[in-house]
Structures are given as structure tokens and as C-alpha cells.
Length: 236
Image 1 (cartoon, rainbow, N blue to C red):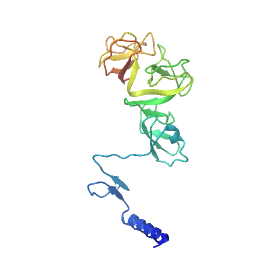
Image 2: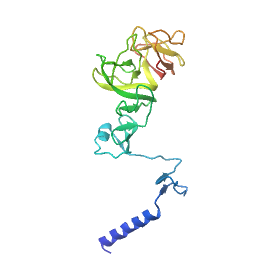
Image 3: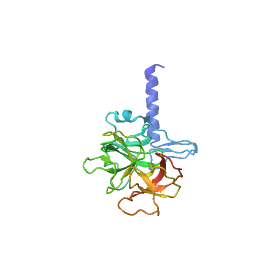
Image 4: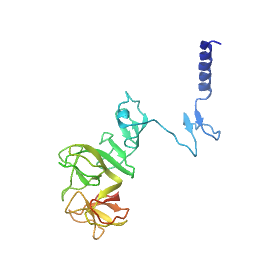
């Protein structure tokens, strides 16, 4: 049998299989595919592994199809293409949303939702610093003053005028005031002396212009310089 006949038989077999089985089920229990699915995968011990790539590789995909899925290994998050831009599988309410941050968002390993903003504070801002949104530069953040409401916590050190991730909801690590000890359950508020850090609320309730609530501590830390404390964000 020559190669042409082999190819013809293989192609015919594929056509017959496709016509006879318009839906595909992949499993070990012999179940048929659900009527609403073209592909139905079932397992209790394995998962679905989609293409993994860096941010540069993802953004270099030529003409991505609407609905294309990839896993970004740099930000450790699933992304999909909506026909215009890449978005994470995350939604949030308030000032920040995936649409308003042009898809520059991610879930942190700790379980926080972060968006990428430009540092317009004039300084290098350390991981765990509390920041406010800039009222003069779109898509930028600054260090809070006594009268500016905090909007998030810096996820990583960010140089002046550089972009970086700001955790705006979920779990984050925040810098606490020097020589301060905290325990799980303590309410942390904006430090009235150094607005980029947090401090323990004396009465566990935020009040006054310099006492903006940051969140609730979920781990204990002994006193020390530049200590990062894990909190559940509750910016008020």
C-alpha cells in the first residue's frame, strides 16, 4: 500500500469518527459527554493543563483568538483574551476593575487582587507600603497624607515612575510602625506619623482623619524595624 492510500484511509477514518462522535468525553468511567459540551473531561485525580508562558510570550501571540486561554507564569494567573485585550479571571468592585486597569491585574500567591499602577510618589516605595490614588496622574499612585484615603498596599518594591502591583482587596502584607507588636485579630489603621505604614488601633475602631482603617491582622508579629504583617484588607 503506497503512502497516498495510507493518508487517504487515515483521513477517512477521522471524518467518520468526527461524524459519529460530534462530542468528546475523556474519562475513566465510560460516561458520555454532557449534551451541552463539545468536550467533557472528568477526573478525580488529574487536572487540565493549558499552555504556560511568560508575560512577554503571552503578549507576543499574533492575533490571539477571542476566548484564548493561557497561564502566565510571571504573574501566576490564568488569562483570557476578550477580543481586545488580555484579562485575568478576577473581578472586583469599586475604583479598580480589570477593564479600568487595561487588564494589568493579577492574583497574588497570598490571595490578594492587585492592579498595576505607576509610582508618582517621587520616591522608591517599599513592599508593604500603604498608598493612595493620584488625583493628577491617571493610573498612578502616591504616598498618603493625613487627608488622603488609602487605596491599596504595595506588593513589591517599586522605583519612582515605574509600574508595580498594588493589592486593593483580599490578603496582603503591610508594613507596620517601628517597635510595634501585633496579634491575629488586631485592627490596623493608617499610621498618623508615617502615612506609608500601618499601626495597631488602640480601641480597635478607626476614627478621625488620620485613622483610616487598613485591615485586620491575621498573623502575630513581634516588634521590629520594617516588619511585614499579613492582613485581610478592609480599606475605610
